[in-house]
Amino acid sequence: MPEMIKRIEAKIRTATRDRAGRTEDWEPGAQGSSEVYLGVAGREFRCGTERSDFEPGADDSFVFGGDANVEYANVNDPQNIPLAVALDMPVYIRFDNRGGSDAWCLERVEVRVDGANGEDHVFVSPALDGDAILWLGTEAGFQVYLSM
Image (cartoon, rainbow, N blue to C red; front, side, top):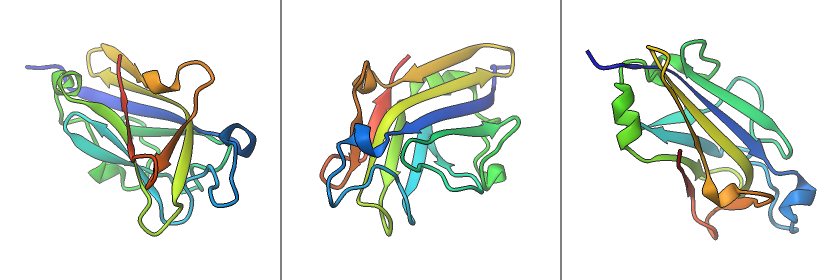
């Protein structure tokens, strides 16, 4: 029997206004009705908790599967997916600005996929190396891909 995913944790830092080089029209946070999704193992998981997420300067953590802290945990549960599938498919963060902020400024993202037998894998964005920041939105694109 293949090793299954036990837990996925996405740690996401939204840039501060100063780091984002804020303009009059763009705030760095993904506020309002904006949504952020994590793509892993051939599907997407909604990154959202009961508190306000993605505020400027915030460090947010989203746990799916074991010890879940996300809203709608039952439909955002990866525990029935083989770990090998997660390693064969793209891993990414996607910003959806329908009805919310026009853009979102990402400073850091780290995704850890834990297998039921203790094997784990960490994915990060090469686009966010060093002091880099990354705007996502209508004028900048909506996704950033991660690698191990």
